[in-house]
Image (cartoon, rainbow, N blue to C red; front, side, top):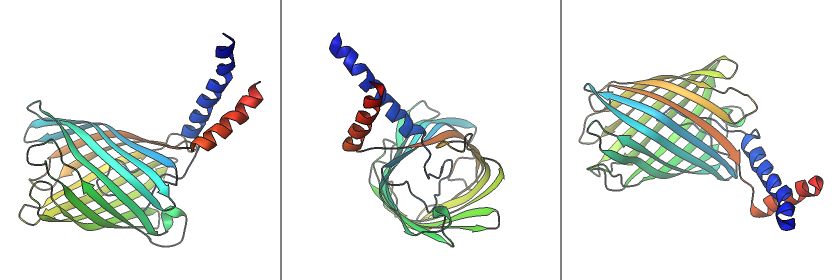
Length: 269
């Protein structure tokens, strides 16, 4: 019993430290619900989780559900992050597949407005597209894009452009996207996106999104988002309705965690 009582303060200290790590403010930029991205990355040792907890796809009077869609960003070192992502999709025929799995490396090559610097921000991202469980998508693919972020008056915009190799056919595909954001109230941004892909031997895939991002507490790394996406071509769903959440926290090394635990435990005694 004595040993159990002695462990109590240490267990509480670890719990407090982990909680503090999750709710402590940092410099993240929530980027759900877009397909495109921005010229920013997670800070070193920072984890950002983008969770799309509900997406409804409506195509030709049939519904499919994507629950969930997960993107995990980890800051490797200054201006560079690793990204892992996947989604689970339930098709109209009730088949369930893992879709869009990928791992990426993203880096800021010129700091700009998203790093509180003057001028245009530039980033690059290279992605290895992993095999999906969907029929025809069980091969590897690749994408490489350049990203520009800047401001014009109250508007922030992010321009994407690049090339890729399709999982399904191995064909070369052109990729583009443009995001616009407008702050309308404290912690609230109205956002929009137009984006597309053009595989070499297939039809254009274009769509547009109108949505909202809300940060309820300015001191917390937590964002809620919702959006409606409209397909402009026959190769994408007619409509998508999506809701999600993004949150971030910092990780400590084992040595840092031990040091902080010892400090708090000494004060508890």
